[in-house]
Image 1 (cartoon, rainbow, N blue to C red):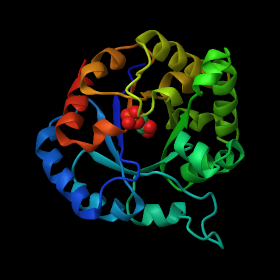
Image 2: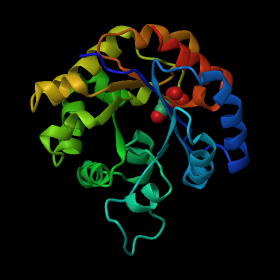
Image 3: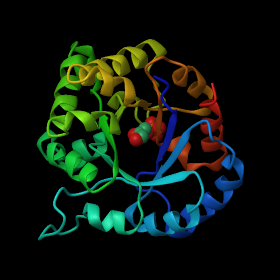
Image 4: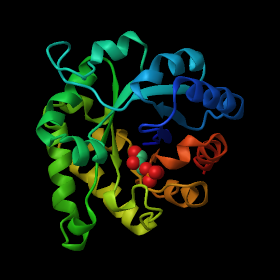
Length: 252
Ligand code: 13P
């Protein structure tokens, strides 16, 4: 099955509203005819409304970077799915390794968040990935299996293909130490196979992204791999020219 490539920029805790708007104004004319791939900007909560408004009618989708599974309640500092959909936000990144490592995000919490986001009509990018120690200890597959199985456990089978899974090895994030094509292909194929244990059809339909030090000069090779359907990009997504180059690299 042909899967539409997907380039998602994860801005993390970067860009004020003014900076976000300047980025969008710079990007829009550069990618207006890029219908070969889906494009998303995952912005801080504070920039969501502005980026939704300034990209309306364009091909750019806007994603949040986290979400609570409850619709409302006494959860200070959290944001819910209805709060995001009200803004016309398209989707949400869940389980990023920075949230797991720095903010105590657990697989158990993700088990609730992923189906809650889907039920609310949000697209989900679920992030998984191993640490350097886990890779060196030969524990990569065990780690990925645990994260994928837990994150998708409460997702109905017929919706598995709606969840985009981003394989982001933690040792490659923000380090400039990109995975080799062999490592990226092997892990992304393994992630797809894990989904395939529940449904071959949904595994064929669902997209798997690679993330971790994706740059214009290494993107084409990674995006050309059979089980890599796109990229989740941190640093290089903050710069209009680099992000445009990544979108172009998805042309194949
Ligand atoms: P870098 O592209 O900066 O390595 O970040 C990857 C990432 O964490 C995207 O979510």
